[in-house]
Each structure stands twice: as structure tokens, then as C-alpha cells.
Length: 410
Image (tube, rainbow, N blue to C red; front, side, top):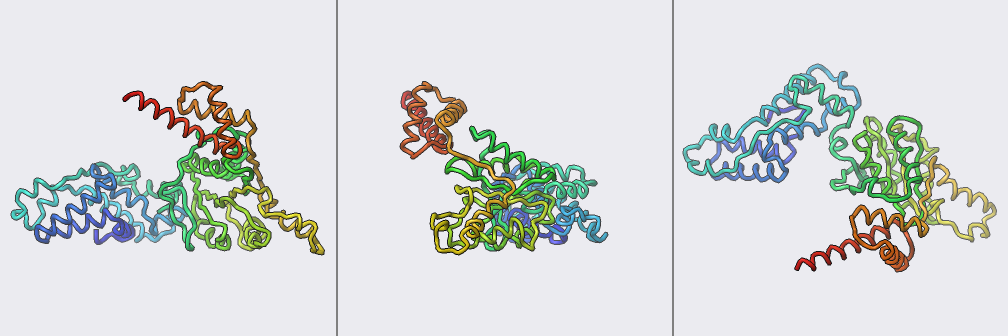
């Protein structure tokens, strides 16, 4: 393990590091050896790999970012010097051999085995299990890994689908929203426009930056997240960028431009006040700046405002000598989105259709007329109809019905 070179960074990961410390403890007294054993098994089991040390070790290698994985992701692995390729082959073989070390192998090699006595039988044991599929052909593992990196990128981009731009770096979202397209009811037409644009983007066909605008609670953000969840296995990834970090856009795209993945830069709840001139930064990002947007990047933004920038009547009747120029300036931002899709509040029939669809999905047994009456009353209390309002109502109704069922049991 100490001699790993190209894949040396897997030693930074907790389980391989703990296993290394256990192997080193084979020359140490019983107390230190037992402690290292317990620490390793605790980490291995907490990661869900007590039945497969091989799976844990080879997965760590699969998602490692190194000279080989980066070059393969950019389809340049054949440009690497022969000694590097040789080192990769050696590392991959060593990682598999390490994963095949059994608890008994370690006990047999422990220097103070006699002093360990009955403790040896009580120590928790793991299974070696199986390698991840990219390692199943040991002789062809390097080619399988190269193909994996070309399709999925490397490092965190292969492991995760959603990211956030924070403090000048891209950080993975460990627990992204799991909303699916099937969870979203109604709005098939506007959502279809966004989905068709996304499919074209994934397939390398001309596609547009997209603005999803309209009333609150109509599923704008959920649509974007659901499309990510539907197409991430086609190479789609998403980076959420806060509005106040738009000046970092050239830095962000420099980090992802060479990757073989498609990235949506997501700006949620976008709006600017009339005194906030930072929208000029977004205009440059969308079109017109020196830093060109790479082909593997699109911008999707959501906003409650059609023109994003807040407008006042004073803008039209104020003391600006060229008031029309001021108005055109504020409107030009939304015009730079090639695709603008409206998500407006549903009317009564559309709202009730969403209610009935959600109730059917949840298998709620309630009279339709009563359901409609209560849903309308709930919408009035919440200040208007929307898909969000519908989901909230169905959640409350489901909880109430389930509670009644539980009460009847007792």
C-alpha cells in the first residue's frame, strides 16, 4: 500500500488508511493491534462494506482523481508516458491483491499471535467479496477504467451528480433532492420544452440557455432538479451558483470545460433590484463577454419575474433623458436566454387535476367532491392555487387519514 503511486491518493480515504494502519499494527503489541482492528472494522462496516473489502478498495480506486483518470476523462490517456501507464497497471493489480487479504491472513502474520489467545476468535471478521465491475477483467481493467472515465468523468464528477459553487471551488452535494419527473403533476407543456432543450444539450445538438419564470410554487426549480435526476446517467451534471458569485463564472467553467460531461449551471430564484447593477455580469456570462461559454455548459435560471430586473413606473416617467434606453437595458437580460418558459398559476380545473393525480398516487380513499372542496378551502387559506399548495394539502390529508387508521387499530 505504501508503494502505490498514481493511485496513491486512495490512502487519504478513511477505510484504506485504516486498513494500512491495521497492517502496520501487525508488529505492535496486542492492545494497539486490537484497537487498529476495531477501528478498521468500524469504518468498513459503517460504509456498508463488511461483506466486501474488495468492493470498497476497488470503488475507492474507481472514483480516484489522478493523472490517469484525468487524462482518460479528456480522452488523452494515450498521450501519457509509458512509465505512467505501467505504474497504473501495477497499482490496479496491487489494489486488487490488497482487497483479497483476509482476516485470517492478518492473524497468521501477527507477530504476537500467541499473546492474542482467545481474543483472535472474538475479533469481528470481514469478507473479501467482489470487485466493482470495472475491475472484473483484471487484465483489461485499465481499458475498462479508461472507458468509464470517458463516459462519466473522474473523481467527484463520476461519483456525484449535483454540486454547488462555494468559496471558489466546486463542492459535491452529498444528498441532492430526489424529486423525479413522475412526481411532478401538470405543466406537461412547459416542462416538455425544458426537457427537449436538455435532451438536445446532452446529445450535442444546438440548445439554449433557459429561463424558467412565473408564479411561486409552480415547480420551476423542481423541474430542473427532476431533469438532472432523470438524465444524470446520460452524462448530465449540475452546479448551483449563487447570484452574488456570478463574477466567478469564468473560473468555474475553466474547471469543467475539458470534462466529457454536460453541465447545467443552475441559478435559482434569480432577480435584481433596479439599483443592483450586478445583472451586467450575468449579461456578459450569457452572451457578449470575452470568456466564451464552453460547449458542455448551459445556464438554467428560475425567477418569479419575466424580465428578472424589478421595474418601477418611475423608470418610465422619471428624469432620465433617455428613459427608453434604461428600460431596454433592464429588459435585455431576459432576452439573452434563448429559451424562456412560463410557469403560471393553475386555474381551478388544473389545480384539482393535480390534487386528484396526487391523491391517486398516494392511494387516498376519499370522496372526490369532499377532496375538491377541502383542497379549494386550503388554497384560499394559503393565498392561491399552485402545485406546491396541492402537495402540501395532500401531505396533510394523507397524514390525517393514516392517523385515523392507526387510531382505529387501537
